[in-house]
Image (cartoon, rainbow, N blue to C red; front, side):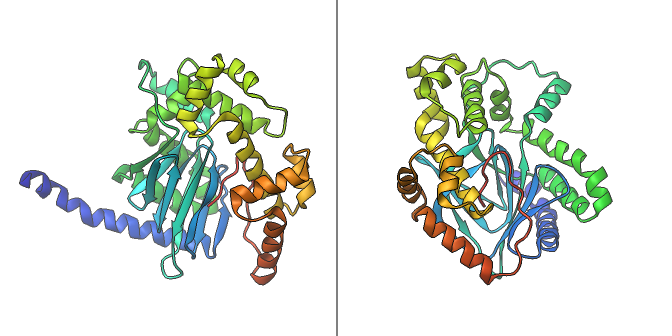
Length: 325
């Protein structure tokens, strides 16, 4: 025990220096609260000066690294913390609940890197991955941030501070970060999302189908058939991955997209409801309020009041999946 502690001690100072540099770069790159686009597709920066109580969010498949502040996620019976010592990896689009700890003195600072399955497939081919089946993974993990990944993150942020470096070096550093995650302890979950013979991979395929066609006429029978499962097996594995039923997941996805249309695109309530596949505006309003704690009309008024009271909004990129800070 004494021998291990002696070896570990010198790593403390470099880790603290890396953490301080990460915070410094993110403060420079964000300037104000909000979601900030970057020159690199799929990479966004986040800054927030207020704590938020537990509320529903939906994240796209991504690597989400909090560099200052803290977030706590709730998925079914699971509780996971991701902060400067933990990063979050989602191998499938996932709705859950989240609370945020931040203050004006120590704003939450984070970076999100979308998990691009084409890039993952290319990396697996380059690795000549021949590993056999793994145990059924989960769709969401919080993992300690190690020195190798921390250093790659600093290099990415330094590149983002220089337009030419962001354009030329940035994509390669993002690829390196994806490689580090793929070959780390969470790699099996991302790998399984590409393997349709694996039960997790079949559910991942169904989730991608939902997010591609969430406004269409989806039903459980079709989703189960496309996944190559019986209804009972599909229900069981779907709930094991997402902690919810297939149709509840579809409903939650539609409501998150509707909220994005109202808050970011300025659609009125009726138009947003129709756009995401609701035929009844009253049903949409009831279900929206049940999920978010306020009616869509109140959400629209809140958004307009906030926009009128603050400086011009930072650029927001609308991804294929809904992502909330």
